[in-house]
Image (cartoon, rainbow, N blue to C red; front, top):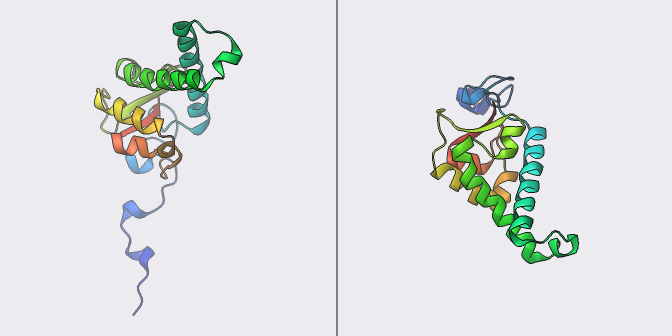
Amino acid sequence: MASNSRANSSPSAQPSTFPGERLGLPPQGPRSVGRVGRRIFALVLDWALATVITNALTGSWDPAANAMPTHQLQTYGMWVLLMIVVVPILGGTVGHRLTGLAVTPLRGGWPGVWRPIVRAVLLALVIPALIWDSDQRGFHDKVAGTVLVRS
């Protein structure tokens, strides 16, 4: 006798109607899952900030010099460092905060120190950010136990 796996599946296995539903988050407004457009804009802002800081520290504002691999690695390192330092202080990166987003643990509250480190290291690998679940949480957020929400 064949069984219907859909009928036997648990409620948590059922598809959600909006990102964050399975996490108990609202469909829109404050505390709803931050959507892709805001995330990309926040990333652009954070990368621009990392570039400006790197340029200021190296004293290099020449576009040709800034295109060199060593300068790009310095900017990449600054981007990761900013995530590690700023998320515990502001509850998100500068880009997150400017776009109305916040990094929060699933249980709410302060993200602490270790969560931003885990998120930043995994984001530096890029691939975890490209692997999302139905709640639009990247692998980096799943491992860190966080979710990027609208503030």
